[in-house]
Length: 139
Image 1 (cartoon, rainbow, N blue to C red):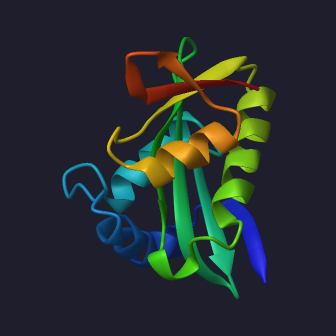
Image 2 (image 1 turned 90 degrees about the vertical axis):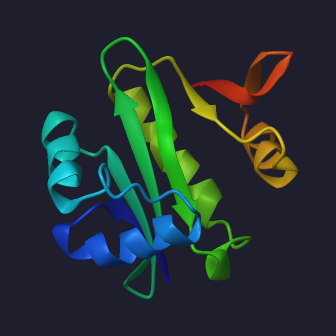
């Protein structure tokens, strides 16, 4: 069964594996202490997807009162294509809307057609027609 929820300290090692699998893990930034600081500054900023009570995806939201974005978004390859990413983006939309955000951005590798198609399919538009790797979305 799939569930979208807030990050818990006990998720760290599994989330770390998720980030490593997506080549997104940064040892300096991605620590349990850093995750706690994120949550303290902005409760609800780390979204976790779980399947059968096991974390399989993570999405980091950032909002400084001026700009909002998805900073990091990773799903275990074994669980991609099952609607988890869509559910996580839907949850991000809800949280950002509740924070008063009107639009937000996400950056994507311009060479990754699958990721770019995913974002466009979920309502994201390129911020600049010449830069296909940065998208925005109204919420």
